[in-house]
Image 1 (cartoon, protein in one colour):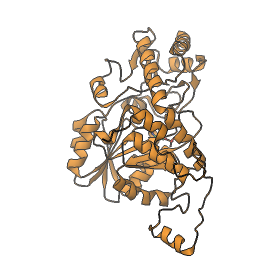
Image 2 (image 1 turned 180 degrees about the horizontal axis):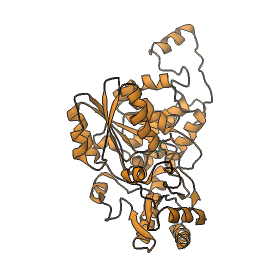
Image 3 (image 1 turned 45 degrees about the vertical axis):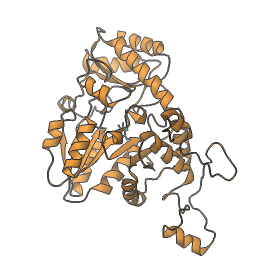
Image 4 (image 1 turned 120 degrees about the vertical axis):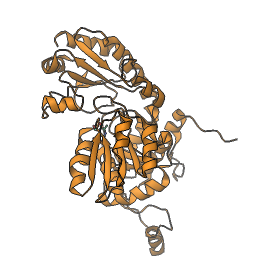
Length: 392
Ligand SMILES: Cc1ncc(COP(=O)(O)O)c(C=O)c1O
């Protein structure tokens, strides 16, 4: 009787390089650009796709393959492509699927560079994009046209933690003949598996939770074997391949991802609950709180609510700035998904170039503070935030 292995077992064992001739238990780092052929005939067979040996690291590499197979096992997809960054995964997927004359629908609560790529770069190549409210399935459906080929979303969305109903978007995409793509960076395959919910492609910034330690920039595309074979042709032309050393670190990160995500989920819930009703905090935004407007959807499509929490400070921009200067344990920086708690204030940092009105139109209020809750003792994180809020 065949038994499906659990996620924690797959995180440790999937993709192990069982064929390594010396029996290395940890995956060797194949730090090589090229692979030698035993003969001209073998070289010809590899280029013809008749021999599946390696050719050149941009096309594939054994260390990179460990990461790809392990991530695909966790995401419960047939295959994956590792990329040099999350943006390489996103741009490769979109360029692989869209042609001039096509139309794409994109939800509004999105990582800024992805939104810019869809809204500014793709139109220069003749692709029209319609940006819709991430939280409205009806708005997504209403935006469908005959030329719609892609529906792109991110959930939970950066930085507002707005959610997209993935099962509903998957169904809209199938009816429209459009490929659906979800950026699964915030949730990770431990908390959410978009392709099990009917989405065609799940993309990641592996720089975040997957790597987990803030020491690599990496990305990935997860999908069916057929879709991955199609996107691989674009991937090798664009050239955003992952370096073997970074693939080793990403594959190692995956081994502890289930344990780290459990700690991130638990700490984030504790921190969210601790600041509900705090006099300096107008609102705590966390999908795990019953007060989150889409809490019911979060409970339905996520196995855990994640490590991202937003505190909306009553004192606006100045309060946010003062809090950033007062934190001690929390690290003041962009990015997310590291073992340490990271804090940022979009209105004075990442989104300071936008007008307050433009920020508000994408749900970023002046006092919004974004926390990527780490795996430290939650009491220590809470104590640091409390002392910083005293001056906010
Ligand atoms: C949700 C999300 N997707 C994609 C990216 C881009 O990832 P990378 O920086 O690895 O290119 C980021 C980066 O912050 C992100 O937050």
